[in-house]
Length: 221
Image: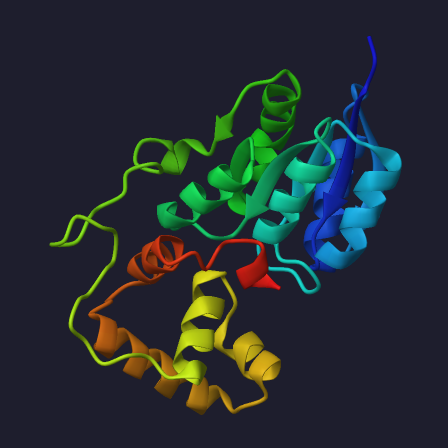
């Protein structure tokens, strides 16, 4: 039986080492490439055409969502399994819509990674058990659309960019570095944007972003 060929993309060295050890310990799986950012991962996946790409969500270069979309469109023989710290079920919908076939929390990897890889490689879909029951539910606002707020003051460009990056899973510190402002400024932009839109949680921000096309490939460049 042919081994399952896997490429791994994660920008955290400790996580990368741990996942590598798990995959290498299984004789039915062959790790054929590693990348530490999305921009490095995409040409690697094109070149080696793995069966599975295990990718993190928040990476430099291309984030996990854009990488998933690109791999799905350009490498149809490769299935994407998302491995992430994000336990918010609202992350699942945009990633699955982009073409991911699996969503696994990093805290579950030691127990469930190999099971998830096999499930996705065999053509199935794998959702982490802790979020599977409600992952695809999408609460709606009063107007019937997720996270929408009508008649409110429009966001400034900085507020929009901050909220978009929050929805994509970046921390305040990472956002501050990306848009070249202080962490305190990021917190201010986030608070103002959330107040204007009536958004109270990260899940609501993610749903708002999905409803406004913030997860389209062009929006994530």
